[in-house]
Image (tube, rainbow over all chains, first blue to last red):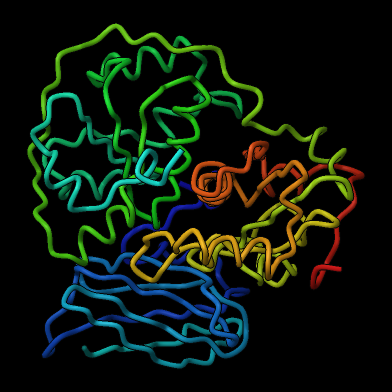
Length: 102
Length: 280
């Protein structure tokens, strides 16, 4: 489904579009002891701490956001009360990796 | 109307899983999550395939809604419990849609699928078989749905609540940040709209904040005039259905409409006013 007619967040985040040179991508995986965590959520907060987006983790614990240049926080929620934050700086035309170990 | 008439928690659902008068419905735009696992006994509704007209941009008509609910085995007197992913956006949209077509007893599962998963509650893959019903819907209730001309006429007169993220409101982003940003619409917001992101009405686990917190949010912080009519919008109308639910169902405001055309319509209209940056 194209972004124009939908709004939902697919597990793991939306796939990279064929032409993504204008995107500021933040992407990564959530692991526990080196094993992917597929049950959980990644949220993106802006530099004011406001919620911007959330995706369910993919089967490989993966997530992806299409942000804008700037500083963001990735918050991971998982069963067992896991709630952990990581700060990340995104820039246009780059895929910024974030690996989260819980 | 009390909160329990419109909202149930996970414990309530757990206790009513085998109640024959209660039908659980998982609603999402992407129903692969349902296929991987859902609450026992839940049927699925696909937000796009089941609720949207396949050709033009509009809802399925009354007859189509009757066919859908009959085929899912939902009767007029059933208590329908809606839940879904994306913090219940699409479930809230379906709630509003069920109300639009006159279903009497419909409630949301507080926190939706996320809360259920974070609680590590049981999920199954078995799809229930429900006997077909003969569902009768009413005509759409126009008091719940705003169309574009009404939205333009409401500028500066009614409460307009833009429930997208601050970055979409100011024009920095064109879509939620889990989606690619290259879109056809202009960026910005409808003049005089207040930005109260849907997410401020919910906790991290997707449950709604308390009535007192919600009243403080909309009245105390955003200075919404509760004496005026209100129109909520977002990008395609599902996040604003979440806010419509808060304002109309939880806080009991009498005149609240959801503008389902939202920014993908408004931001493409020729000649309409658009404001950029912070609310003025």
